Amino acid sequence: MSSSPHLPPPVRLGDFTTDRGIFRLIGFGACAGLFGVVAGWTLLRMIGLINDLVYYGVWSTRMLAPGGAQAGGHPGLWTILVPAGGAVLIGLMARYGSEKIRGHGIPEAIEAILLGGARLDLLVAILKPISSAISIGTGGPFGAEGPIIMTGGAAASLMAQCFTLTDAERKTLLVAGACAGMTAVFGTPVAAILLAVELLLFELKPRSIIPVGTACITAAILRRFCMTPAPLFPYAGGVIVDPLHALGWLGLGLAAGFGSALLTVLVYAAEDGFNKLPVHWMWWPALGGLVVGIGGMADPAALGVGYPDIARLLAGALAGGAAIRLVLVKGVIWSVALGSGTSGGVLAPLLIIGGALGAVLAPVMPHAAPGFWAVLGMAAMMGGTMRAPLTSTLFAVELTGNHLILLPVLTASMASMAVTVLLMKRSILTEKIARRGHHLTREYSIDPLAVTRIRDIMATRVDTLGADLPIGAAIERFLSHAAAHRAFPVTEPDGVVLGLVSRADILDWIGDEVRRDLPLRAMIAGRKVVTAAPDEMADAIAVRMLTRNAPRIPVVDTDGRLLGLVSRADLLRVHQRVMLAETRRERFFSFRRRAGAKEAGKPEPLAVP
Image (cartoon, rainbow, N blue to C red; front, side, top):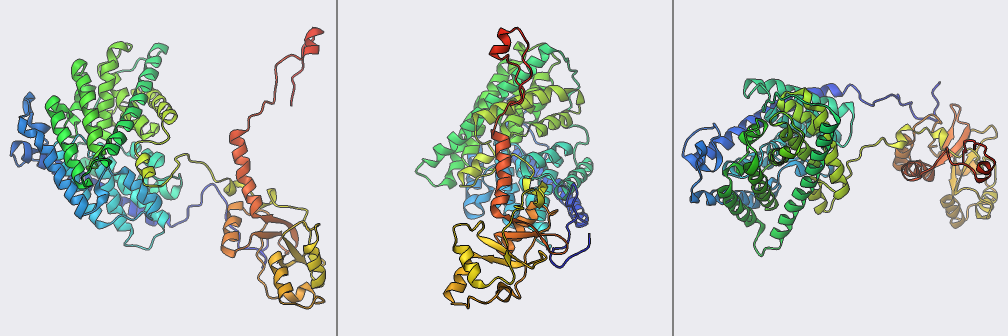
């Protein structure tokens, strides 16, 4: 098709819109992977160092048992005050440093992605890992992954801010750093990529997913040199696939879904309770820390990151009363501490609570290998609470190194998510964002305007005004009740479009007392014609309407002859069709017998309404 001065340059259409700029993002993604590993390695050692110094007086990063209960002992009464002491420091850092270090990090990352232009500041990148190390090292019942996700994302965001990039590209790099941090902690690159898709990116484009994948792959390779190269929590148990066990998978997933909803309610009930206290929020973490210390006396296993507890659950060594106590204590102190606004992650606690729930329910489930139901509980609790079932499924597979559990884990995670999406409007991650006055939706879909051509929505019966028509006649045309449009294309006798005359033009001409015998050609001379081609996509025309302030655009062929007219209302009808496709129910075949046919003993033909 030859080019025309009336038409914009053609846009190359295809499955994706990615261009060569992705190569630069891939390089940045590899750097983000390095940042994630550095953040993960540093934070885990800081946690171990603080834990060992506070509880044992030992300069070590080996992460001894939190709460001072090494070798199966029971912590002393003095340890009740340790989490509160650490929380005081966190409150001071949040008050006089940055309030963004409060919480578990993922909502803050989401908020930066959606509302902050993917910009995180240097102070957050410094204070978040320090506050999290203090919180977890002094016994806080949190995981390190949330703070590492926040720290890795902040580091990648700072890098992106040093270069000339778009908001979308900075968002990609922030997510790349965050997912690299998750990969560094758990060694789960595929699950980290899925986390980006299900929770952080809010899109699925090569421009975003390839750099994120690069960051996760880089982190997975580099972590082998400074962390455990094998699966973090190996599980070699087999899987029995039959209808009875499938019902067990489903049942455990449903139970985890109700547990996920309960945990979310507890966290925000605790937050609401702290909001009612007559003290400054800076002191709330200290009160939450006091609850953590008391919970540590009831069950020392509930303190800290809890990775040894996960290993015991998968080995089948933690069951019965110990598992019940762990579920109750961990759930309560984690909810209260997180609601108080201290710093810490959600992923490891969800794994522990879900795994303990699976261990509690194992006696009433079909027989399986030791630790099997704990694995399912871990994944289902994570999938339901975070509403990321694909992430939780692959996370369990990579975390254990056992691909045989794929089908059971997928079943349980999907069932858990089904419960939570029906019971709650928002997840534990998005509720915090909603409480700040924002709204987001996590249902991905293709923009219908991006797959609709203008020829399919334009009006083809268009009234026009001749270029030689006197202005007086044009005014009468607009003022008549028979006027079909609010704007009319002005055309030559051969159909070539010269411009568009609107009601605003008519009012201006009346107010300026323009001579009524002048032809329209004289009044629109020199105007730039904004047109569309029939094969252009509706989303491009929507942008053109906005940037050119053109509520209606003539659709022309390559020679500039009029083919139709497209308006903003035509674009809105595209979305209306999508809404109807989601809400209107129809039946096209009916298998009921007609009354007359039944009486005659004849079969009724298929009816098509």
